[in-house]
Image (cartoon, rainbow, N blue to C red; front, side, top):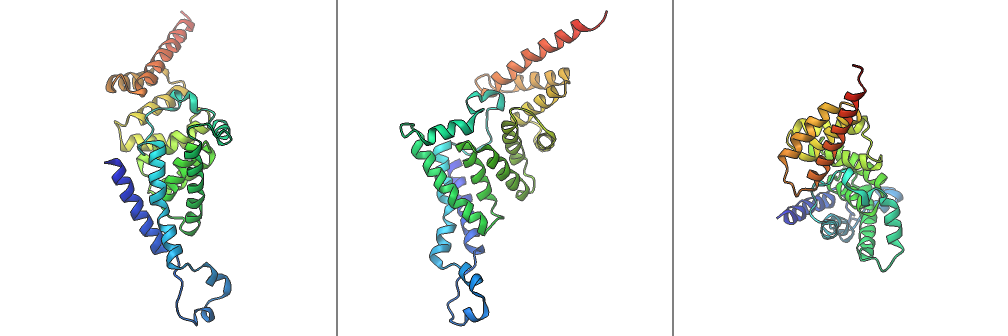
Amino acid sequence: MIWLGLVILAAFGGLAIYASLPRQRDNSDSSDRMGGPDRNRLLGPAARIGFSTLPVIAAAVLYAAIGMPEIPSRPYAERAGERNLAAAAAAAATDVTDPDFQTDQQIRRLLSQIVLSLEANPRNLQGWIVLARGSLRLGDVERAVAAFARAYSLSGHNPFLAIEYADTRITAQQGQIDKVSRDLILHALGQMPNHQLSRYYYGMMLKQQEKYQQALNVFTDLYRDIPKDDPLSGAAEAEIQLLNAEIADATEAEPN
């Protein structure tokens, strides 16, 4: 049912775009009341309908390409194949034998249309989300970060978007958690105390602050609460082993 909800949400976004775009006037004296540049920006019914259908088309194609449009289930540490997304996407773009080549080309064309629709209606939340996820799919992590920042602001600081935005920032920064990402993680965790990815990144944040015992407690609780076949389970288990080693080394280094 997730796909149905996505299409409905995209349809509402399309209606919002249609209603917000300037309409072309029929009366002949409209040109007298408006200057040439303003008149050129007015859109006829066909153009307005075309712009309004972009979110629906983009949602359907991105769903088929990416899968369920939900929060990533794998943290940065588990995405070895995604750590050089830009280089991988550039290689795929020139390799017509790549199975994802046609899909990536479709997404590129759709994102170009989404950018045009956002220029006409920069407050289109769904458009920014589609742009962010599509850019991430194509390896343009920097544009994905910028688009998630706009979407997060327009959403009124939605906690799900907070952790998705943080996850993308951390990917762009090679696993490092900066102040903005820390604030996003803490906001998401405050609103969703049991959210698994938020808890994982909270543990990573504590680890990078060298609060090893606190981080170990977070990862131990997380590992206990998630199914063992979940990708996050393996990541949490690996962090537990690393933290136990760090704590043991620190204990041995203490003077007697």
